[in-house]
Length: 153
Image 1 (cartoon, rainbow, N blue to C red):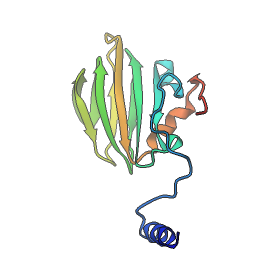
Image 2: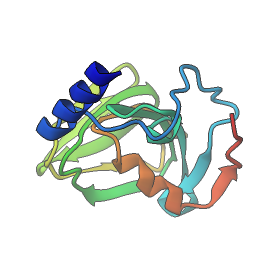
Image 3: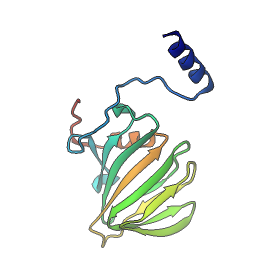
Image 4: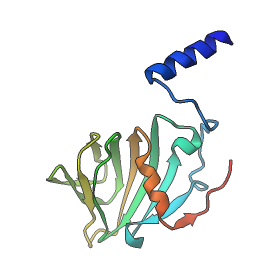
């Protein structure tokens, strides 16, 4: 017990860990995970893994956007964002550089870079898996209207 306490004290002192506040859920049922309406009602964010499920180092969710929707330019100061496009395509801008992304593409956005997304009107749906290394940015989606109520484990 003393060794565990000393190790935890040392780790907290040098900033290598946070004391867990929630038990870790190793599997999250996507059908029961909280979903929120975003992008002025033209999209949803499904929150799968994050600090609420015990994932303290990263988070994962699914972002769906309808044609004509946008995610305004923003920055994640302390979080890397990685996106895997499952369906559709979009125009992304990273630090002023516009690029097209489509099904099967992976996108890497380092922490601190300005970025945005625009889905063309002609695109029926854009769906992507979104990972933040350094969780936290996904919490902004909770400001949207809940689509699926959160269910306790």
